[in-house]
Structures are given as C-alpha cells and as structure tokens.
Image 1 (cartoon, rainbow, N blue to C red):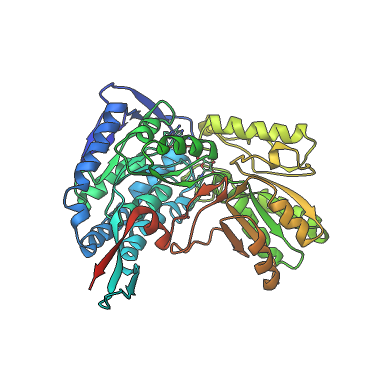
Image 2 (image 1 turned 90 degrees about the vertical axis):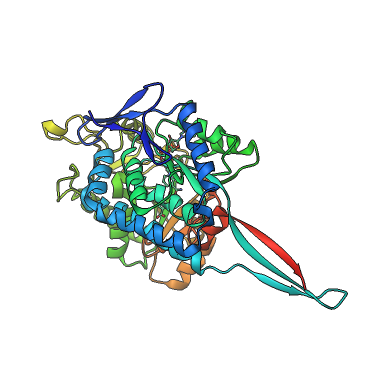
Length: 486
Ligand SMILES: NC(=O)c1ccc[n+]([C@@H]2O[C@H](COP(=O)([O-])OP(=O)(O)OC[C@H]3O[C@@H](n4cnc5c(N)ncnc54)[C@H](O)[C@@H]3O)[C@@H](O)[C@H]2O)c1
Ligand SMILES: O=C/C=C/C=C(\O)C(=O)O
C-alpha cells in the first residue's frame, strides 16, 4: 500500500508513533494510500527546519535568484502535470476535465505570478524637512515575516495551498504546510518539485494529519511560528485565531460563505443560466465562492427556474476518467451525510424540490463513492437553515424578489460576506448593486473569473485580510521604515 509521508527539511519522513490513517478515493470508496499522522515531534521538527532555513540562504537571496527558483517550481509542476492531475483526482474524485483546467494550472500560476510580483511592487519614500535644514529621507523596505504556518482545505487542494505558499516563499519566508487529511497527496508531491527546482531544504515543509488534537492544532499552537494563513470553515478559523493570539501572531483567514446570486430581469439569460450552473454545481458545489442562494426578479422567476432545472438535469455524474462527466462526488461519506441532512431539512421545511434531492444510481464499481444528486429548491422562507448555513454541496435555493433594494437586503442578511454574482445588462445598476452587496468579491455577468493581482478575501465572518497581488506582499512581509538624516 502506498504511503504518504511528511516532507521535513528536504526529506520524506514517517511519524515516530507509526500512526497512519486511510486516504479514501471519494469516487470508489477504496483506500488508495496510508497517510502518516504527524505528532508534536514531527510538527516541531518541521518548524525547526523552517526556522533554520529562514536563517540560511533563502531569505538572503536576491529577488531575481528567488524568482528564478519559483519559476522553476512552476515549470516543475507543469512538467509533471499528469502526475499532479492523477493524484488530485484520486484524492478528490473530481472530473479530470475540471482539475486539468483549474486546479493544476493554477498550482503553477500561483508561483509564477508572485515570483514576478515581488520584483515589480514598489514600497514608499518620503523626503522631510528638518529644523537644521539638511532634511531627512524616509524609505520603506520589505522583510520576510518569518516561518509561516499554512493550513489548507480539501476542495481545491493544490490551488489553495499554492495560493498561499507561492507568495510566502516569493517574499523570502519559509513554510510548514498542513494539508487537509482528505487530500494529502499533491502537497506531498510538491516536495519533490521543490527539491528539483533548487529550493533549499527546510524552506518548504509538509506535515500530514487532522485538525483538532492533531497536526493542525499542534502547528497553530507552536510558539516558533510567526504567522498563519488558513483556508477553511469559519468555526475552524475562530479556533486558529485563538491559538495565533498567543504570542501575537498575524493571521490571514479565508473562511466560509453562503453566497448570493442576484438575477435581474434585464440580464442576458443565457449568461445567467450558464454562470449560475457553474457557481452552484462546479466541483460538486464544493467551492467557497459558490452560489447556494439565488435571488431572481419575479417577472423572469418561472423561466429561470425551469431553465436551470433543465440544465442541472443534463449534468453527467461520473468518475475522474469519464471524459463526459462534469459532476464528481463529494469529498467523503461524512460530507455527503452532512449535505443529505440539509436535503432532508429542506423537505421538512416545506421546500419544493425542483430537481434532485437524493443519491444517484451508480454502477457497481462506484457504489461506494460519495455520490449525490445536484439539487434545486424553491419555496423556503428565511428561517430555514438550508438558506442560512453553508452546505458546501451541489445545490441552490431560488427565490423571487421585486425591487433592487429587496435583493440587496436579502443578499446581505447573513453573517457571511465572501462572494456574490450579479446578472444584469444595465451596468449602472450593476455598479450600484455591487457597491452595496456586503462581500469581499463581487462578479458581474461572470463567476470565478480570476485576476491574481486583485484583492481576494471575505468580509464579516467570511474572513480576515486580503490576499492576491500586493495584498499578499502586505501579509507575507514586514514593512520597515528607515529614516535617514541627511
Ligand atoms: N474563503 C476561501 O477562500 C475558502 C476556500 C476554500 C474553502 N473554504 C471553506 O473551507 C471549508 C471546507 O474545507 P474544510 O472542510 O477542509 O474546512 P475545515 O475548516 O474543516 O478544515 C480546513 C483545514 O483546517 C484543518 N483544521 C481543522 N480543524 C483545525 C484546528 N482545530 N486547528 C488547526 N487546523 C484545523 C483541517 O485539517 C484542514 O486542513 C468550507 O467552509 C469552505 O467555505 C473557504
Ligand atoms: O473554494 C474556494 C476557492 C477559492 C479560490 C481562490 O482562493 C483563488 O481563486 O485564488
């Protein structure tokens, strides 16, 4: 049986305790590898390796030297594209057609964009007058923040981990990464690419394991980590924030959402249907930016519901190697039980099940996978948990609105504020509504269109801080002002 180990100080190592756990293929339910579970000893070894590497050549390299190495990391991912694709799809069950267009290409892009960004973003300087008339010059310089703890989720494993590791390394930091227990493999495989690209030992470290009472908690409690970047559930973010507070460590939190789509009667209906199909069902609905609440102007409500139903019923449910499949399984049976509990809650709360609502019939070879039907509801009122809590599955609830003000009020009524998608051909209305929706990211007539230079993050309980472009440099460096008396 294949083993997935930790990657510490440039070596793959097992856990001293010998403790391992199963890595399950969500499409078949089969065990595909045994994963070493890190104890405090492994986490400490990883943090010490990162600390030692921080004081080694990495943070002293010129920007050009570091940039060249990170471009080599990106090239290494592309050179081993199929290996990363196989590993990511085995861990997640997602269609290869999806991972080959999103997950793996973004893994490489997340290194390239920041390898260049660090060389092109200026800091600041101020000349000042002084009483003696000779003046002084203030100028700011960026220095690495230090050892960064990176804790990543299972829905877009390589994409979301490299979205943090790319800028962290570009800024001269060293990292200890704790990937999700559901998806250990591509984070481990990246260690080989780092080595081949010339990243010094100890700069990139990986510890495998669970969250609470396991590797994740040991990492966030470790006193020798200088900051944490976390992507995951809001409740988990609260726990990590509490641990980071000891020793006053900085945090960047990308958390959960319950995102609203707002569809006006003056939309391009084809665009709105295509975009809502992706935002509700892509990655089996396991995208934090996805739309689980859709508000549609009353005059087009019936047409919108029937067209979205028709498109949802064309989705092809299947395993990664099925080239026709565009809907894979949920990440685990446990996650499927959670999503099915909301499917049941919707019925209990009196929803109309427009389509789906259960488990699809699958061939015998896939019977043990965590498959689920794409589902659309109407008819719920606002006190249903189904439209107040993040489900993180292939489902959405559609409800009508009559005025712009009502749509904005509905969109903003939850404690989340991550993303929103607005569909209207009236761009004045688009700008007006987008400016009032309480979300960190608002798409107009599009969804998940990503320019990596832009600010990315959630407001309210969907996160703290922004990453992307120079916002990442803000988090992954300490800005120092030097005042030079002339
Ligand atoms: N805002 C974003 O950019 C974004 C992106 C992707 C996913 N998410 C959110 O992530 C969630 C789905 O991912 P998930 O189920 O892996 O989230 P999760 O919070 O359960 O786990 C995320 C990571 O945190 C670790 N973890 C769990 N408990 C921990 C603890 N007490 N201390 C330290 N680490 C701990 C897990 O092992 C995993 O590696 C959804 O809520 C989704 O909205 C947000
Ligand atoms: O599931 C959430 C997806 C987040 C995507 C990003 O962080 C990104 O596109 O950089």
